[in-house]
Image 1: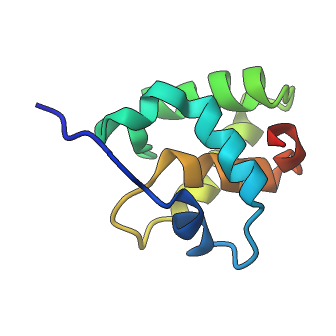
Image 2: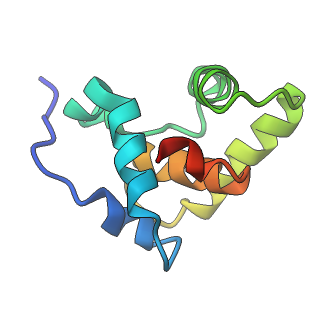
Length: 111
């Protein structure tokens, strides 16, 4: 059985990587992720899985952020975020999406 996440301070997790967090963007990303955040395994990103990298690229970067960069460039950005989050035990989806949106200058899309 999958453990459910009841409460989480997503902004605090993002702050581990970005000192000044855009709380409106965090809230928007949480809304975007919706039901995926209800189960622990779905709330995490597995950067070493090709299916997960493809999902982040296709659904978040292309569909949500509207990016049209070549797949190789988008994958490179995903892996860069994964490397940045490597020291943390949990790679939270909200934090990964925040870092990616920030990387591409797209945080205002979540206001």
